[in-house]
Length: 126
Image 1 (cartoon, rainbow, N blue to C red):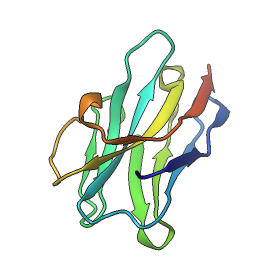
Image 2: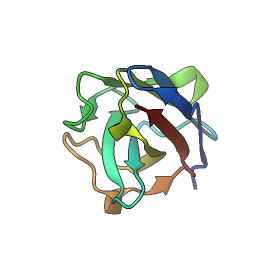
Image 3: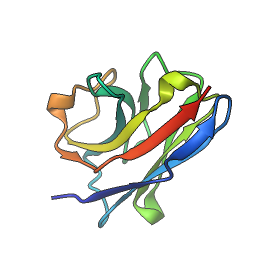
Image 4: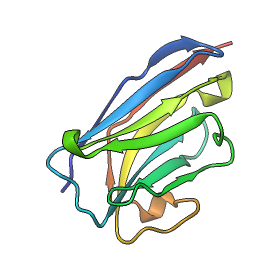
């Protein structure tokens, strides 16, 4: 029910930064949490970061803490993922995701996601 469109992927070198955007069609509900997952070739889709739409509570995977920052812009109906100090292990397709429910700290499961974006490819050369 909630179309999500990712943008900002591309090819970068190790150590570079990249900012992904996820634009939602219409204003997200204050009940929603938005987040990012990623899936590298041959691997399972894994949680990256999440943010509550109303209160800006955040959660991060251990692998990206201190390097990635998730944020949202209410006026633009958009969630961002600022990725710094990228390395080859960050190479993956990044998917925007929505969970319709109250905020919960910790890692999200892919099976709990209600809506998915189509993905944005991030390639980091080493």
